[in-house]
Amino acid sequence: MEDLERLVAGRLQALDGAEPSEDMRERVLGRVNRQVVVRRRRRRAAGSVAGASLVVAGGLTLPSLLPNADEGTAPQPLAVASSKAEQERGQTGGTGPDLGVGQRDPDGTGGQPAPGAAGGFGRDLPTGKMLTVFGIGPDGTVLGTGVGPNGRSDRTLWRTDLSGLLGAPVPVAKADGLYTAAGSGEVTVWPERTDDGFQLMCQGPEGDPVQLGETGVARRASAGFHVDEGFVVWTDRSPGGKVWTARGCADDPSPLTEGYAAGFSFPYVYVLREAEDDAGTGLRRVDVQTGAAEDHEIPATTKDTLYAAADGTFAVADQGSLTVYDTSTWEPETVPDPLPEGDATLTAGDDVIAYTTPDESLVYAPATKTTTPRDGTSYANGPYLLTREGNSFTLTRTS
Amino acid sequence: MRSGDPDRQFDEFVAHRFPALYRYAYVLTGNQHDAEDLVQEALTRTGVAWSRIRRKDDPEGYVRTTMARIMANRWRRPKLEHLVPGVPETAVDDPGLDRVHEVDGLDAALQALPPRMRAVLVLRYFEQLSEEETARALGCSRGTVKSQASRALAKLRAGMLDDPERALMEDRRGRS
Image 1 (cartoon, rainbow over the protein chains, first blue to last red):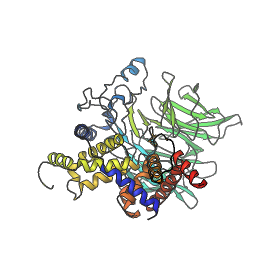
Image 2: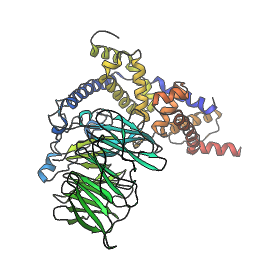
Image 3: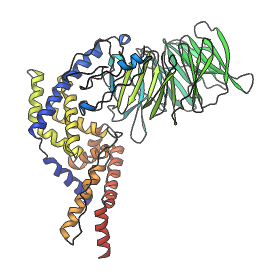
Image 4: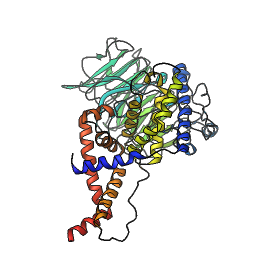
């Protein structure tokens, strides 16, 4: 052992004599007992509440990393609401410890969580890494990978969902080159690196993962693969791209059309195609069940442009600006707020669109044309919005 | 620990082992406030999972590992406070002061380490665990432990020299 190592050992051993005062002991043990009761109750609630019925009444609450560490200054709920009344409701929590279930315990003794409230989960993974979310599914499924302090991935796909939301994410698969994933309760898909690119892997509710298709999957921002209502839609690696679809993992893939699948909100696949002139980008909307298609054109985009589709909405983020199309009229709405800078992900839900970088995000509600800038990441899909602040994730039902 | 009311067993375990667990939290964090938070969170997690943990032979080991992992995974948490060496007083030529300054600088440098690095040092040099055992305890690779320990020691060396008093001392030493 070197001198410095010996010195370090000595200084650490010198700290080993700190005795807790009786006051502190009482205080800490009191908190431990209360928190054990609260968390056990949350676990039971999470296990017994059916996923689809989870609703947050009002805003989000953001559980702290160490509950009770600072009871008086717990973060206030952030409202993602469509009206002033909803926003006001979202900010009416008590001052007691955050139960992480959308309500606060007014007296700090651990009240019964309200039925229908959702909760959050921590970022720590059993591997010692931190969960970095790829996105969420339309049923609130959360998928991500573990990343260490040096930015190195654990090559593991982690997943949690509403049935286990208050528990830690569980590993689904290991894959080389894992850079994103998509899924829901029925189907999870992710890319796996091969000698000549990436192939798409699929995991159903049972059995082992299977490879989807023989022609790989394109690695292109927003235009790789999507899952909704049990259907998988993806772009293969052929020149110019070809869009395929399969119902679940066991179905034989079917070719849908040429181009890149920029978004999928059942039953519509939004496919990028070459426009007739250089000034625009062709966009074909195809019904995944019937194959019926209609063509549109949007302003010219690039390979770095991000896209996201939701029910009645198609969003495009390009050069620092977010444009949202109403797919019944194809009228564009450009969001005036600038987008956060950095590598980004664009996701769309029924009520909100979320543009997120690793550090900050912008949540846009088309119905009210309001934006909410946030510290931390945000992801939307279906009726859900997942947000992270610090090391805490919160899933909220937006409608 | 293998029979009886689980909640009562947990209470007894906590009552009996709290001082030792708090001391370990203090070694891991280096200050009372964070030690309180750490031991509280680790005991809460243990209490929630007590029905499973009590069947194991070493619940205290579980709590200690939990504390080390919580600490190691706090690497992105912003550090709001740093303990710093005391305000320098007028320098006097006293050989005994060198040792005091060295310790002051080291304590400050230890306190400034990222939590993950500090956790690695505690396991390696306080608990005297091997690199393999440390990796197992923290749920990371041996390479990570090795690199974290190496970087931590390098930071400590640099931190000791960055300390103004320490630098002054080195300067004095160089001129004498």
